[in-house]
Length: 419
Ligand code: EPZ
Image (tube, rainbow, N blue to C red):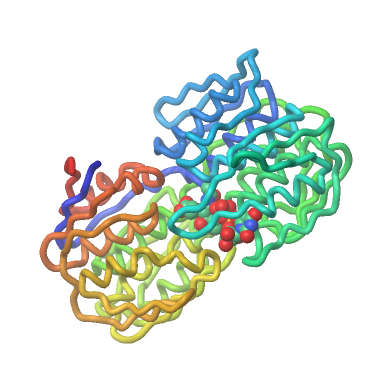
């Protein structure tokens, strides 16, 4: 297993944001809705992307992936099972269920199980597909589904925590081949849903309302191939904003989509940053002393849960007390204990973390626990006195494309070593 050695660094310069993992994964699943060739560009070379490639190959696709371009073709053989050995490494694989069932009338997908950020239930996915008249049963940790042809319906998809991104993707994709019209009420509004809908419409789907809490789909008999350039990764963009704040380094972030980060830019400004926005770039000028603020994570367009850990780091060094409320994954605080070992003063109670600002934090050996917590620990290492070692960085490789190279190009003292 690899680890990072990191020293306090002042960053300078500009970075280019990569394509969005969370936009790409459902779009890759959508290729199951057709036997025609599909193409994607600006695809980040991440282990999650490679896991989805393996799952699609098991299901009968032939895939070429070279220089961030993905070409998906169909083999004659068609299979229906997405195996546990692959699904357990990436819960997002569950979004193959809807398209597989819609296109082939049959699907067997391993239930994703839980992870460190919390239980990852799929009740909304199953409820939605049942309302499209799929027959579904749970057996030996698998979700088995079959249907002659899905039938459109008016579906309420809200859960205890509001909307669900991947449940929306599963029902949206399935509805594209259902008989009649489907209305999804309380659908997720994330930019990744809008990107998926654009790809589906290029395949010939009839969709309205994507990006709002009510999406209307008129089912078609078949869909064709399509091509799409993957949108920039808003979470990677936000990660660099947090790094700029925590290290007091001005940064230029290019190939971004600032309009996907309004809530994040708002919080950064509350913390004292000056941010100049151009169409595809942001120029960040951090304050000398960070102002404390309160952050509540919410479904889009609220502050994204995927940036909660990263933004905790600059708040650790703020001149006052801040509160973070985690309303999407209330247990998503595995990084708190590690940050406290570096001298932070964070007290956690349920979905709340109270952060009392300190003047300095100090390097330590810390353990990454999940994708976004890993990024937070790197940012903390760049801001801490003395050396930090971040262990188990395979978590990071799941969702960030060459992050340490990007930081090194900005002047960061960070190196990867075999553990
Ligand atoms: C997507 O996961 C993202 N993953 C997550 O990013 C992100 O944190 C999450 O959305 C929230 O924005 C991908 O897009 C691949 P949800 P998803 O269903 O769709 C509850 C990362 O770091 N829920 O929107 O699985 C759930 O427990 C990853 O890139 C149900 O109750 O998340 C949570 O509390 C981590 N029942 C809330 O909804 C369900 O059937 C939102 O989860 C489904 C979800």
